Length: 151
Image (cartoon, rainbow, N blue to C red):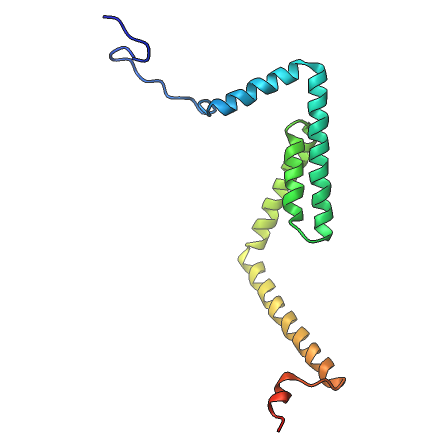
């Protein structure tokens, strides 16, 4: 009995892909391309400079967005992730940022601190509202409910 191409022998167990394998053709193509780039010193240096440039631009954009409008934290983490693909120092910084973010999340979700923060927020809003109303009343500006009582 002969086995045609594409058929398996009777009773042969099908091999399941191991974790990390079977990601697809695209992942294999990327791995082969990166291996070729790393084998050529000139291409490797060019690639690393390109990654450094793009990563730093995204990181700096994130830092600018931290004081201006925009998703600064997301851009900073994305910039570090780009740099971490080629540089060990960026991997360490990204790991530290992830650990810090995890701690901040745990701290924010702590029920006691969360309740305290909610109470502080309500008190701060009440004080701010009272200060605004007092300011308007002292300087003679017409309050919205006074407009309703006019003849």
